Amino acid sequence: MQAPHDDILRRLRKIEGQVRGLQRMVGEDRYCLDILTQVAAVRAALDRVGMKVLDAHARGCLATAIRSGQADESIDELVAALERFMR
Image (tube, rainbow, N blue to C red; front, side, top):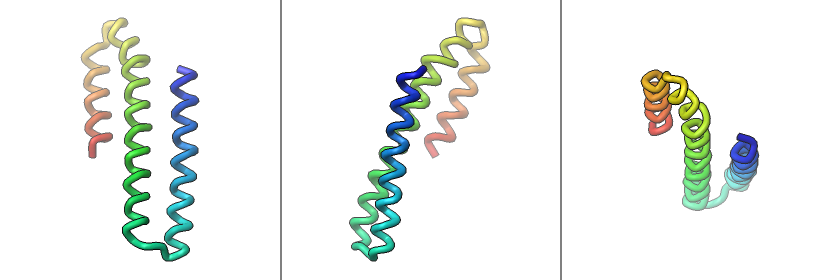
């Protein structure tokens, strides 16, 4: 899972920079709608990271569990994770 791991870390670093930019915008008393636009961009970026993590989990951990006969437990765990992610 090295490549997805690296991609996720790269995306999170970019999001960290976006959040610092938001802090700067608030500190500079920038226009509220510009700040909200950036908040929406950060949310969207975090959602994409979440989907990457879910994809990696499904292709790695879930696939392994299914092959080892633990499909029901693993699917239940995935559904619970999706419910948390979708909130």
